[in-house]
Length: 295
Image 1 (cartoon, helix red, strand yellow):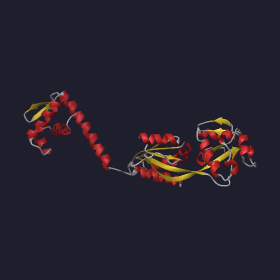
Image 2 (tube, rainbow, N blue to C red):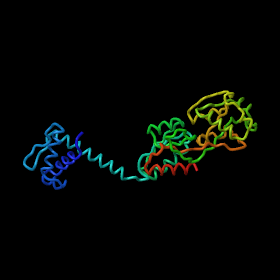
Image 3 (cartoon, rainbow, N blue to C red):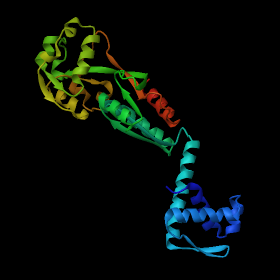
Image 4 (spheres, rainbow, N blue to C red):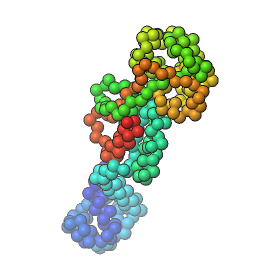
């Protein structure tokens, strides 16, 4: 590894063009400058300059080392600027959440980016387990999940909640939603359906639904593309359950009905990051944006 101080001396010498003036700029003696250059040449294994008294000309190898020293200096300066400069409205943020929540957040995040041109958000849709894996690996910095992580290496805070909606084909209008009716209708399954149903049956206030074994419900369709899940229901193929935000983005609202339970059902939303990790100020800006949307 090349000594940083020798590189700095060499870079300055090339730019100043004179040993004596280089010594003055660097507050060194002229023999000290010469010694740095000789040590750098020895470390590189090549002659870097051809001396002509107190002046010199660069060799081809010297030109390559100068270009390296210049890049090194620029990268160091950029790093120090980034360490000193923590603008809450500039820089990249990496956020992950469910697909339905991404639909809800994305438009207002774009508004935030439009307001602050240097603020850039990378938004990725993923299930809970994948979000936590990506935070742990460092692939993302922030995630919104629907369950409190049970591992000790995550920090989390509640940022809101979202309603869960059980939807049925239009021809079930007026019929009481019971365990038998749901078994008759059949489930349009998706990756989070059984988790949502378990929460819904437990909270909705119906003892009949609470006692229903989810595995007793036949699956009539399975799809993992969010925008397509309500489509099966709208065509009368079965019922399903989704967050309100997923339905908000589906245009054919009159093609299905939403069950009105005795007690409304919602899932808590938690903002998660790696425990004890200090994030730049821009993440506080992103957090406030997310909280405002989910409030």
